[in-house]
Length: 405
Image (tube, rainbow, N blue to C red; front, side):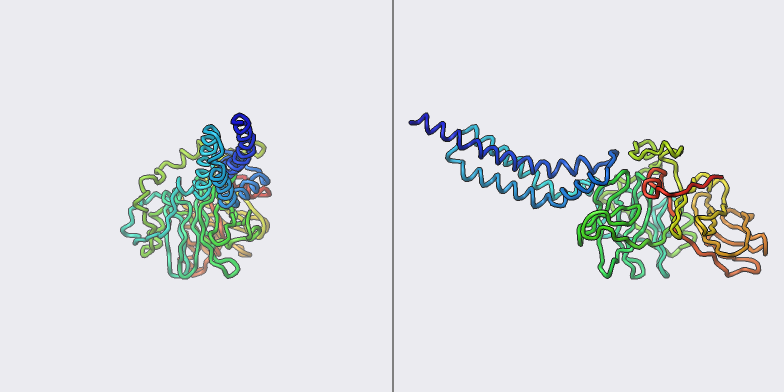
């Protein structure tokens, strides 16, 4: 009789262990699938990225439910199972519980902590080297600078300038600094770092948990999929030049808790050695070739940054739009202007960062405004442009043309 009872107990424990194993395996998959697919230096296909994002979205409640199932199985069968089965069930319960807890952890924000309450100080007292780059935003009378070495760590700063809610974003792996308006269809969004997709950062809004591509400002997953954020114009300038232009501007202060982890001054040299997952071989351009990307009137064009810096001034067309690229007096900052239907022909001026139109001899500054001559007071329209490594620009602008000197 005892042997029959023991056999009966063993028989009953098999389906219990099987159900507990399946439940624990689901918990592990909820962690492993997103972690495996959404990681740096690994290519992500559109479909598999959607699957990974869907799993990660469902993971907290799915893994939680499976962990509860294992717990109930342990409680219900504890008195009727043998020691070996009890040990196995407890092990599965621990595994399921740990995975369920881990689904609530944003591993990317553990690596790069968010800057929840950004603080600012005056330009005059900012501890930023003059040659360090900043992402500069001016709205109305308010001007703010976000040091790249700070932004490269935090990736996102949710801020408000002149009443406009913005998300200042930077992705060091693709060298892309972009600023997006956080108002969408009357709703205010707050963004968090969500991962990476083929070398470019992913953002997540707290309100809907939709996932956004940093390089394009487009929602690629979630309730807002297909929606487009409005771009806010910004300039990547040297801090010294920005401070000359905006002596009363405000500068993002480093977060003292994480300042020691900020990017070093030579961060670009380190990033250029990293592996890229977008194949640029057919284009004949190296993946880490730094480009100045312009999109206007539905057309995109990429300009090698070194070519711009070498020539100081380039007049060209993007599609049918006549444009002008000008290097600033610091020799490293760039701005882009639309010249419209004007027949003015520009040449670099006697001082770096200025230009002269050959028709009237008027002198124009780096802000695109004539400051001397008969056209004094006239300004060119600045258009959006930003730096981007070629692999990322090509990936998100597959129809882009490339400037050939």
